[in-house]
Image (tube, rainbow, N blue to C red; front, side, top):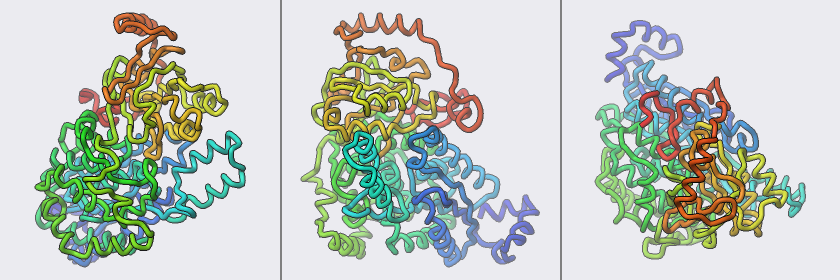
Length: 577
């Protein structure tokens, strides 16, 4: 074991560990890093300590010694509406860096990593690839839905309705007080739920353990089994980079298409792949989503809360339906291939147990996870658009966009911050046919915050929901729906074309053709050459804005962040390409 070799190099290690309660016998055991985002930060992390301790029990039962380390995450929901959201994406890289420090400063033989939410799960997956420590992932599951299946992503809609006077303050307060009845990730197919599912799809979790209801005893059993499995990984030296290959990432992307996963996965998955030494960008999503079958009827694009996902069979059921499109020989943390894992589940009582839970909801399995032959859609859910407005690409979740907006010609209404844009929307200064631009919100501009409240203000307004578009170099919440195009690259802070758009310019959107273009100037249609001439003139006049953040965490992140189309992660200077 690597830990025993390091003990010989660091003689202070034994007395220091004895000083915190280790026995002499513990020193000789395989040493397992149990890393989590536990903390009183939000419902996705507040319950993780119990799962951490159960994982430690599994480690002990299998003959190892666990060490608990913590890197508490923040909550995007609590950070919304103020500058706190600018720290969200930066927190992903900070957590990954801290886990690297924990692992490298004190050598371990294997790990169990536990997290639930938007940046925490991708941070842990990035750290698994970076450290290459034999590791099994445990995700903290999903919270219960509230009364009448109320879920948190509806709060943005109710907030906009209250601001417009469509519901009372008392009604809005009721919704706020009942949207989060338990711990776990928010109960819709947002970024947290998406990344939990993709962690299993990559082969880094025990089969059937992603996105379990947080209050379900099966999640506790999964945490303990993960602790036991960590010893297996250590003893067989099964390292993540030996298991997770490009084929594993392609499996994850196919699952992403089937579940209508969050657009944020187009940043997180390339960043994770980078840490595994796999070259993957957002265009891979676009290519693989074409012709992919979209099966999952879970909010925000569907009808049901995310806790129903496990009841319908979870990741294994999705994989069974799209099996013809997967690499079944991909290796996993069980020591077996994906195909072998699916076969083992079919022989077990896994699906019978799920069916028993589902029966209590009064729904059929195919209400939640459609069959491959009867999908919700047959062309995936995500598209990458390009053109003179987004030479490096932009992202749209076309499954959540009204059909009327799949092809549109709109008038540009540019804003240099989200606050001004949302004020214009709520005060009816934005009219049908407008393209609302929010810029200088990319990774280098302000850390790439979410535009969640803006998308909710649009999608909850019957007059605007199918008649305008939101275009930004920022990103969206996984809960967002409606006509939203994000990740526009190059971003405004780098002088991308989005910085050059002026009031009244004509914007063409064509999802099927994958086009996002400026086709007119100040309301007048123009030939492409004329548009390029005008953009060149504007570019010559454009001057970079002073950096918004020059110190602290965001000063470092905004200075080093890569393009969102390449993962939005911090890269060492000189390694930008």
